[in-house]
Length: 390
Image (cartoon, rainbow, N blue to C red; front, side):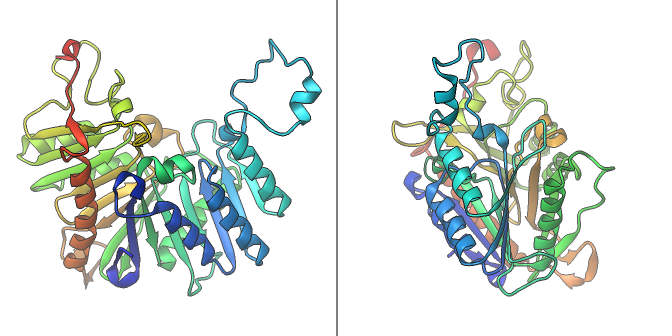
């Protein structure tokens, strides 16, 4: 088990199906299986039956379970009101069919087991992926928080490159529990600026938790990028030109930092992506000295998406979670971003407490190793802009 900070932090990268070291599905199932009193689950999509069965098993052994899902994954996308089926009654009442049939079958099983299941109220995208375990206002020995880039789906657990973190800390659990309560109440949107996010001390490792849009996570990413002294490595699913993070990376590159990025091949090909730039602009925004971009090769029965939202600054700070580098993610979506580690010897909110720099570097090294694997010639090709982008 990749444990850090004397067991307070676990970090996983997967899936094993794509030669990454960790079994993400197993991590999620085991985390749920260790619940004793409560599970508060906020996840965009749930279609993985093994994870669903772990949730159902928890409920049947007396665990109180609350779940919030993105409602679009429970709808039949191809339903046409202009051309209804020959028998509307047959369509409406026979066993569910269509693209999201498994999602609906799982939702029905959850409701039949008396699980508190709600659909999100966000008009944009409910993009969270987290579970608060055994924490409802009071910490217990089994209290913990699981989060990252991984949806609870077969594709994210087996066909997409993703990460999962587990934090065993009452403060971190409290932050996510408060966010879950807000989501359950249907409250969404920027309420002021959300206040300055607290910094938690996990055995000498600083951890900061931010939520979109309340805490404006894009600003935190920019702040950490501008602290870089030597290099920045990242792996990101969606990196849009609407984000200001590309400008921060350009500044870092101009200051001499080496920037290495892995991009999802499908998203990178879009005209709105940061590496393409504004249509007609020359050269593309991220085609600069000291910046090297790569896209993993898609293979039949292999990689589907690079779904990480992961960055490592120098050798001490990791940024991860559900937050893609786009303006909608910052301004409209339900998201979370967490920062693990620091380059400073003391905690900025308590100068008496020392940062365990060695522990910070151990976590960063584990995530750097995975990004290096993704951008290696065995997995990826250098990203090249289209001719009309030059």
